[in-house]
Image (cartoon, rainbow over all chains, first blue to last red; front, side):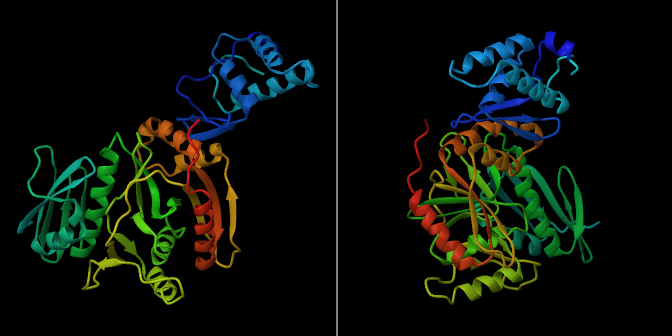
Length: 100
Length: 287
């Protein structure tokens, strides 16, 4: 996990992203022809995977999105982002060298 | 191999033009099947297709393949090949595998893999007064999102013919207005062409039907992302060209309601679709 915290997750440039009017996002992997549906939080993290954010910055940016009254703790956010990045890695949607 | 090139016909399908030369018996049947696509003169950029005959065997020669068979087999294969080639060559359009019909309340797109009852449902809706756009290849204008009529003949198997004949005797139904194209009945499937076609319009409903014998009617509203994923699977393009259509499909699912439907009883299905269409006759504006 150490490398993941310092690495800058980067989405593969050939993956297509479509933003739907209801706030959901679908991404299409042309290598596998598989479509993935992301909810608003997943879409936010996916947008952060442009190589300019590291893990800490992604969690911080996500924290800013939740209002002050939110009951979601930083620890929960870290767990969720870690899990989500791991899924993206397993599905080969990131080119970053991070290994979780 | 002897070339009995008795006739040459030219056809325009989407943006592709085809020049076909071959024996009269093949070309006469092809001309009947492809009549709405017939053009007077050959275009300079035409694909050239030849049908040659040696005794009872016919050979279809296209720029990409050679295929042999009886006259009717070659005609059916040639008809399929022309449409497949035209769709593949149309890099600007957005074609989906499915049927489409409309009544006064709006148009429905019916998207499903082969064998899921698209043609049966399309013909059944026609028997109820709906006007068809297509039963196989949906043409969607990527700029206006309107579904366009595509007058390819319907390929109807014996089972579907029987179902529609039975349905047409029920109250509220009539025989669909179709022209039978192959009176000698030498082809494996009956070929019909509707006498009327729908006028271009933005669909009011996207439907993913699945015929399941004995199943109760079940309609489930899809989220736009789910509908988008299913539409991607029904795109008729080479994988490399698919992404250029993604935006069109996104605009479509943002605007039009989509449902997955399991059904068996055609009468109940059609009644449900009519009610659904009445409730969605005005697509919500794109935000």
